[in-house]
Image 1 (tube, rainbow, N blue to C red):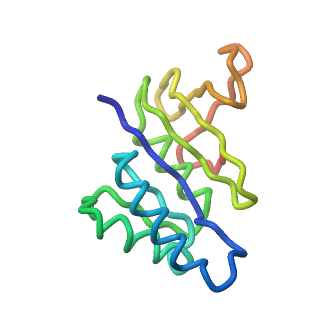
Image 2 (cartoon, helix red, strand yellow; image 1 turned 135 degrees about the vertical axis):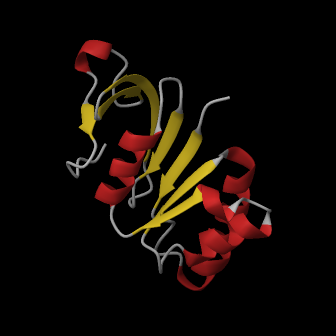
Length: 130
């Protein structure tokens, strides 16, 4: 089975329950994905803890400071058929299915684009974000 990756900065502006709900988010992520990319090391600490509480392998969690770092990881790691869920800080989600790999780039299809001719290309190391 291919990668099922979630890229998230966590949920924000939840008041007193933010830590609790992000920890639960991590527990739920552990059941749905096999790679977790947490954007913002301090803010995503409760998600990290929730993942570990469910027995998620710490080696399968990448903690980064920026979306650009997360995108570089995705460009270097994913293969055709892998699925990546990007959570936007505003709460929107974009699902990408890896369509094609070429040297240092990846082309995706998903919520943002279903036509391969229009699909964006992400280049590793360029700081691009998808």
